Every structure is written in C-alpha cells, then in structure tokens.
Length: 294
Image (cartoon, rainbow, N blue to C red):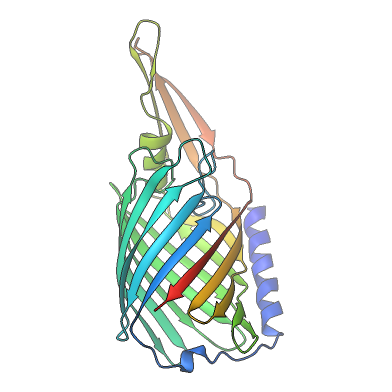
C-alpha cells in the first residue's frame, strides 16, 4: 500500500513540474502527411512487461518494416532476435495493422497485432497470441494526457488499461525532441499465469527410476484487474534528413505482487504444493534505434 501512495505522490509532483515549465510549440504536425515506408532497427537491453520479466535477461535486436498511408492506415511487421546470450535465436515475429489520426490537438491509434513466439521463448508474454489496442491523447500544450486500453488474446484473455502524462520539449529547429513521460499500467494477469504454467515450470526432469517429475505453477488470482507498475521514461529523438535516432530509458516500479502456486509431483504421485509471493524489484531498461523514412 505504501508503494502505491508513493507512486501517486511522484505522479502528482511530476504533473506539477510540467505545468510550470514552458516549452517550444511543435510544428511537426502542421506538415502535410504523405504516404511513406519506414525501415527500422532497434536494440532493447532487457524485455520487461508491466514490471515483470524472466529471471534471465532477454536482450532483443528488432528490425522492422512498416507502410503508412496518408489516410491514416498503417501495416507492418517486426522480428525480435535474442543476441548477446549463450542461445541466440529468433524469439518473436509480430504482424500489425491499424489506423492512426490527428485532429487538431487530439490524436489516436487503433491497431491489431498477431504474435508468433518461439516455442522455447522465456518472454513473460510468450503465451499471448495477439492483441487489439487503442490509444487516445490530447495535447493541452503544457501537458499531454494519454489513455490506453486493449485486449490480449490467450487461453483466457487479458484486459489492460493505462493512464499517462507527458510533455515534449523541442530544440534545434524541432530536430531534437525530449518527451519526459509517466504511465500507470493496470491489467489482468492470465498471460503471466500461462507463462508460469507452460514456460517457467514444465515437465523436464527425470529421477533415477526414469519417471518424470512434473512441476506446475500458476496464479490463482490471474483474472484480478489491478495496477501492475508505474513507469517513468525519457524518450529522446533526433531527426537528420530521412533518419530518426531514438533512445528511450525507462524505470519501472512494479507493485501489487502476484501469488504464485507451485506444485511438484514426483513419480510416486504425492504432490507437494507451496505458495510464493512475487519478489518485485524496481527495474531500469532501455532501448535505442534508428528509423529511415522513404
């Protein structure tokens, strides 16, 4: 409970700070939108979702290719390749399509995504088959609130929502943009429970008699909708011609740890169950990449 109050206090302080700072007005949205392609390459040092992550780091190299039509329609795909570990491999392929719009100070995105995870992936979202997502924001000038929501498709679907605030600072004739942001994420945890059942714990050991020892884990309260983490990020973009370079450092403060039930069943059939509480720690992660528009 104390962690929740602390997060809300930090959020209020952040909003107060932004409301008393002046910044340059963006002129980028005034430019006519043209149909174009985008090719990108980025690196993520560790996969973190809602403050949760595997015990081992999962660094991703992500090439992507997208088409954006002037009508607002977009479609594309990206792949996530694990590098810098003892087991480098293709971990995820994503296909996405959607519609984005900007009307004066109101902006929104509606998209659908299909995910294909490697059967050996340790990503905490690896049991997610796809999702539909919506984002809506309004630029008041001194602050830009944002709402997000969606459904992630699993054996049992997840529902998530987020509320955030941010403010863009522009420099060097709008070629440099710094956008400090704060986000509160809430969700059910069915995909996380499936990760424990099918990925983190699964039959993989044999005893001396040759019989399998089965280990199973799940979250008994996976359908509970609750705040999962608070995230602070500081995206920095630099535009140079058709290239855009971006760095996004993020600090996640996870809250409301889940209860995990782990059951071990030896060949004798006498199951032993234990109940654990997630050990949550604040986690810092970052991504960096470049996009070419043509």
